[in-house]
Amino acid sequence: MIRKLRLKFVVVCMTLIMVVLGVVLVSIFLSARQNLEVISHQVLERVIREDSAPNHNTAITPSQQPDLGLDIGGKEVVLPYFTVMLWQDRSGNYTAYVTGGTYSNLQGTEELSTVLRECLSQQQEEGTIRSYNLRYLRQDNGLFQKIAFVDISMEQATLQEMMGSHLQIAVAAFFLLLVISIVLARWATAPVEKAWQQQRQFLSDASHELKTPLTVILSNAELLQAAPLSEKPARWSENIRMEAQQMKKLVEEMLTLARADNMTRTAVLEEVSLSDIAADCALAFEPVAFEAGKPLDYHLTEDVVVLGDRDKLRQLVSVLLDNAIKYGQDGGTITMTLQKTDRHARLTVANPGDPIPPEQLRRLFERFYRADASRGEKSGFGLGLPIANTIASEHKGTLKAESDATSTRFFFTIPLKK
Image 1: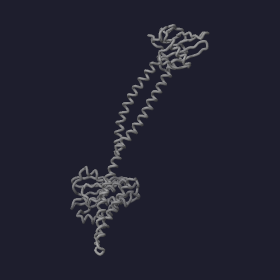
Image 2: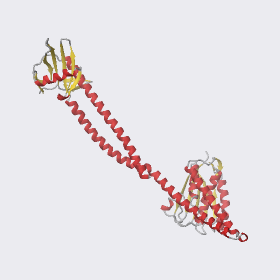
Image 3: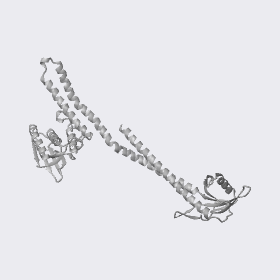
Image 4: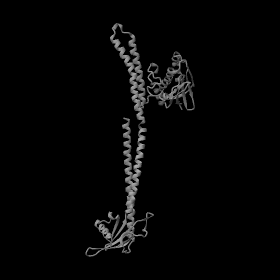
């Protein structure tokens, strides 16, 4: 799926690039050709207006003398040209005289006759003679016609050379952009690939978590069904009830994360005292920590006021304390501190214990991930920290974890109420 998505991304990008490159190349070609045609047309208009002296030369080769310089658009343009005057007698025959230009030995040649025949056969005021690479302009003065010819071989060579170089640049740009598109496709689809992998992992883990309580429920239900009515032990019913509660808790936690994925904001922000919330959670978890042999010590700054959802923040603090009690070292003291800076409040929950390796520390906020590979009750569902992280994000705060040989620490930072 991801490979097809990347391929589609590259194909779409390269198709758009080819269209853009094609439009640019065609536009450059048409613009350059139009500019060159305008220049040669201006040359024709000038020479047909200025050259009038007879010149009885006789060959169609460029002369060895310098070409005539013409000021076109403030620039000097030099193009080979010649002008011809035509008279038609009563019998319909034409008499031609070369009146000027940069060609020598042209008068009376077969080449001149061929050029004039093709020019007259087109019956147009302006056109081209491809066989000799000439562009002409005719002027009918009643008694005679004056025709100016200008050489366009340089124009065609310029267009070919320009388009050849532009095509090479376009091909190089195409392959360069192809490589860039492949890299961008990998970059753009990386979040999709990650989400796809997380979804598959989520389904696998959720199925595993639901499989155990369902198995227990079905087993106890079968025992209840098989036992005589007067001998149905209450513990089987209790097992069913406890496992159903576990399933309900798991489904509620999954629903919380699903709402976060759908960008459904469930937190109602209001002015609340984070000091009071942390104190209430500490009082609630003190007996739990004492029974676990991990006393709870807390130091809370008073009057820490933030904008938040009281229930959500209580859930976040409870997750951090519950996690610290579960994974804290036996006999170690769980500590919770609340500090206030100029703009933020910072809640820290720490527990002594074995350090968490960096590769596992980075994954603590992944769903269903547990550094402890066991699936026992101590490990829970692996959704508490992801939910706490989601709550922190809803409150425009951050939740981070650190671990070393001394302790494992979780830091929750949230902006103070302005």
